[in-house]
Length: 493
Image: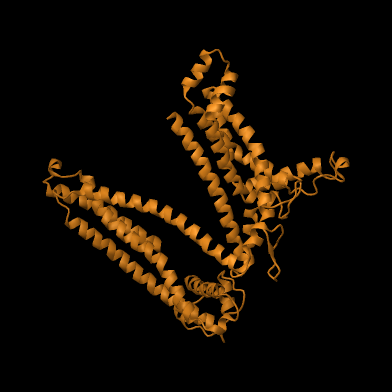
């Protein structure tokens, strides 16, 4: 039975449990609500909670554990001859593709269940059969792969059946347990509130455990990379030249330089415009103007970064090239022009700065509005003008919070990928020319993990070292920014 239908059945049982639990509580009290310990709805929620939560938790755990167990069992049965130097994950990917293809062929009528279970590769071209139902295979299926796929299908089918039975039994058992103990003296409200508290704690724990999992995956793979490649060459090398044939030079300095250079250009665009926009919206704009301008400004924050990247590639880059390139007005003074292609630091920096404007302006606007009105009134009482009050009172008072907003925008700029990929180019170089093509740490993470890379090689594992470096850098900026913002808030709250 599909997982969706299992969830639907469990939810229906929970709804039925809510109605029946509520009715049983009222019946036990002789239809007198005043005799109940809790409100009638709490009794219904108690039955619904015991019906749905254990069953859905079992379903979730089963869905996570079953693929791991099946993959482990099937991979243990794959003969060494089938590997032939290949990675086990690639072989298992072929096995799963064949297994899923057989299920698709059965569903579309290209094969019967009996035919799928007894395929003779000498008389049946399985690759052609699966291709007819939209499952493409890179090569012909060998007997060992087919046997592993059949084992995979059998174990998955058995596991799905057991999952369906056990989940539904858990839902029915929870329903019966909660329903039978429902009476007018049962403290349903206390039980429901404890259950809700546990669910809230679980939700918070999922977020924390996910963060821990991400950090651990980066740490372990980074350690594995530094076992294969010297750590001093990585952090102090000035050449980035990965080569799967050997002789790679994986110095991070050109990538860090490109990352910081592009981020600096972006901040030079975003901070003045965003800060001036925040001052106007908070101090000069009327309520009607603010109600229109601020939402329009924040529309920029909702545009996908891939759209910004295309804007940089198709519009900003050619525009800058027409001015600073070989055919522009600067060609004579710069030996053929400062800019030789549309992809450059300036292209990505300008577009990234536009993307960060609503980020800076929104945070700065909130911080400026948080400055107490008494400071403004005191300044006006001393005879200061509005502009003098903004320059000498409001901005100095809001400066710690504004600095925090700028640092948060910096961490956002450092982690940007698509604008850099499309607007800055792919050259890892140390250069001061803002019209040269450069690249960043995030862009190289994408390129190193793209394609059929062997994850046991330094050229692939370096992506995790790059990610760990970027994680530490942005984490430090975020902690510093939050520290400044918190210190500012404590001063005026």
